[in-house]
Length: 220
Length: 220
DNA sequence: ATATATTTTTAGGGTTATCTAAATATTAAT
DNA sequence: ATTAATATTTAGATAACCCTAAAAATATAT
Ligand SMILES: [Mn+2]
Ligand SMILES: [Mn+2]
Ligand SMILES: [Mn+2]
Ligand SMILES: [Mn+2]
Image (cartoon, rainbow over all chains, first blue to last red):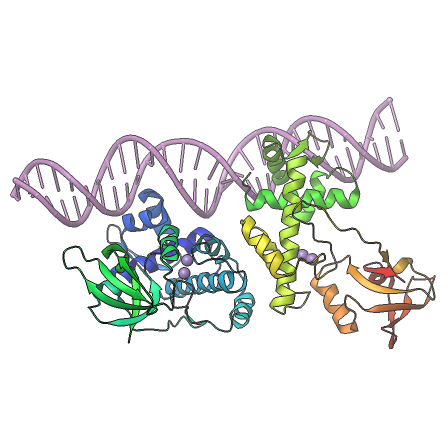
């Protein structure tokens, strides 16, 4: 089934919202995610339901049907592969690639994605540490903990970030925190959740709770 | 100025038609080029004229204004750079890349094109031998002659093809004719314009006039 | 020069994807 | 259980592109 860019974006939004909330996506949540009006969302939901891509009942929120999941997953696969390309091959910084990948993900060609995947050597994770679904839509699962849940003395490697905003990523750049950085918790302040950590066994820095919540660590 | 995909395609069509015909582009020529109706073309021409991208007078055909030329040229630059990427990096065959490049050319990011250009080592020609305009819109000019205009005993290198259709390119593949192939004219038949040629000093083959007209040779 | 053929434009519509404002349904609070 | 707040849908428009059929302008042929 050939979908429009708008339809694809809605499916991806529904996928991401229900993945995070672990329940059906509400009209307002979709509207917010896509920076559009609730009325426009209702409009589109009717059309997506008509095409059998989603389960939609008035006032009840939506979930993706099998074909909707497949389409959303493929879109995410394309988005993340392109992000890898932009960072690994074109040497973009991880804070510059999301917007461009938002466009590239809609390019339609099975062959292109197959070859891109091979060219990049079948990456399993994107530049933000997000898993890249394979051609069958399977995601690699990885055990990870938000830094904010770790305790004094614990150590691990930064494997992902929750927040993808340029602002946040640039701040991490300025702290010299990147994927692969080894983070050791020196202590955490119960009062405000801030933490003192050591990066790669070298520099000690202070990290606020807001930042710690968005850093995903693989312990050990 | 931010243009829609449709607007960009019209500008490119007008550019190519007037380049080839060396005069203004007619409504019908544009319609044919874009496989759309003449009515739709008139509709779009009004909008492009409104945006000061073209010179348009009812019934008189259109030419591009400065900004229209700039936009069309940049689009061609992007198309051809992507084609180089697809062939050189993703190992597509030259007959498979045009359709995908038609999509990729509309991705908007100055930075992306700059980096792609560098990644590809600043190519001057695309996989079909067409010149890639530089960032300022300048095309490299190259002396070239259709094989059909060459005479017995003359020799040269294949540097481009006029016809870009998959059908034609696949036929060339089957003849083992590619860019860079040295072609020596053994003789040409005045009756039907067909020619006998030698490829890279090895195999002798026969080429019809229709094919010879679409092969561009740099003599010597 | 007039008739005929061709090209181009206009008229009238359709689809997709938006929007704002108003109406209705659902949820939360008293 | 009403009422108030919030969420969602409907109503009515608009803009961008596209269409076919009909009208008008231009080009060609006799
Ligand atoms: Mn992204
Ligand atoms: Mn990412
Ligand atoms: Mn092409
Ligand atoms: Mn080309």
